[in-house]
Length: 382
Image 1 (cartoon, one colour):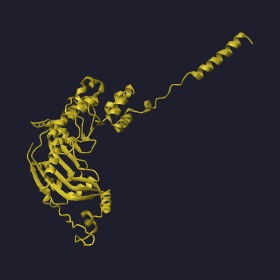
Image 2: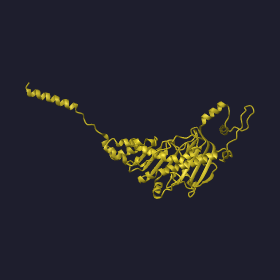
Image 3: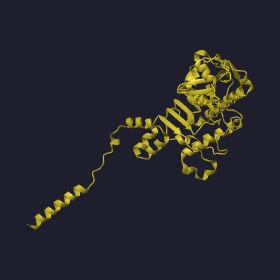
Image 4: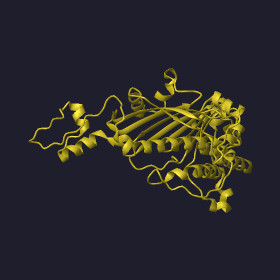
């Protein structure tokens, strides 16, 4: 074989080896998706931490992620002010946490001793602007901020939930509380083992209150289904506790509202804002019209603390010694309070904000309570 043929044959082998060893460039299927579809995906994602990670993936993601209109900020830790030296390394989320938790501490410390066991809240924290967290997001329409927990420390088993709507000041607030939240089936089983018939079984089964001498049962008074508050409610501290619940919830709501000034100012595209907590204790809501009013009217701040001043209020209160809810849940000492400013009194035709304040099973509790006797109260501005 001639030398030229041998060289040509060897050259062919080398070419084939190269063709098998050279990697084929992978196709990035995200490059085939239009920007509009990527924004739909990012809006479904919503969580600000996840969006921040997406920004680090590519230049395209970095330019698109800040254009989302749905954002969820979950504050899941508290950082002490003593760690100032490492604040920059912890990122913008830490600034947001310290600002929120620090500003909420002062107006609530005065009431914490009335509420039983306390949740541990750091007494000293640094104040930083929450705008650092959201400064790169310029098109936000729907913003949900979730704090690590409710501000109000309450005893185990006690139920306390509130929902407030604000414009430049408080527009409405609904508070649902109960002395204890119990599982009905569990309680019935315990009572059966003890051999005592509770009053709620008497009511359900229609058992007469006269007790036979041979079973040694103690007679029990039937519950008042009219909604009249019993005399013991005033004498055993029940009313005092509910006043504390009401004032504490209003202070927590007005403190949250005060914190939102910078965020609302920096994001004129906002149409819906919710500030809630991981415990589901309280929720502050603002819609498009309320956000516009907040921007147009100056906020009236409380002179004593970092919160919005609460105006003079008219309140409606409903009470039930016991309510049984769907799913085997029971509320003892259930209380519902509907609040509106005195200049906008609570009217029957405008009480949809009460029935729609909470999700099940507490929505059922609300609907049951408003059918009972109504008590009217007033509260001065504070």
